Length: 124
Image 1 (spheres, helix red, strand yellow):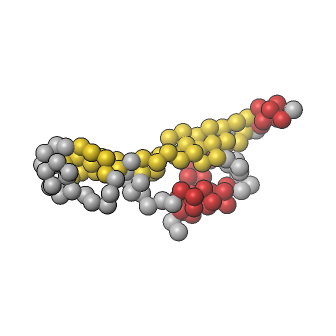
Image 2 (cartoon, rainbow, N blue to C red):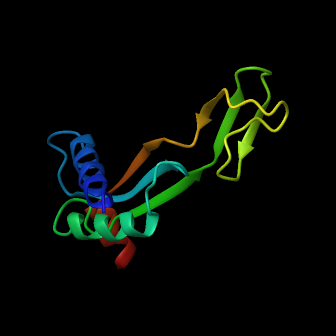
Image 3 (cartoon, helix red, strand yellow):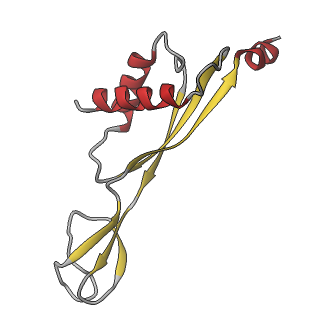
């Protein structure tokens, strides 16, 4: 289960993204883009993140995951398409000489933080 390692790295990056000296905040949400070919099981990643984030700035933070489709381009005829089957052959010319344009990424798009004073105000 490589999702535990990914969750630990996402947490490390998120915590290091908080400006030094900033106090009284918590990480509320982390927005991720994950390609369909990245072999990440999103539910496992969420579970692992909840485990590693316990008692940190990101305790209770939401992992918002946007799945990225697999897009390819044929290097012989230039045709571009969204790959929706495990067949990597150009549907226009039947060439196997293709380039993947997207679908393997795992990116942190943004991190949302909340000041604890804001959270207290929302509660009462």
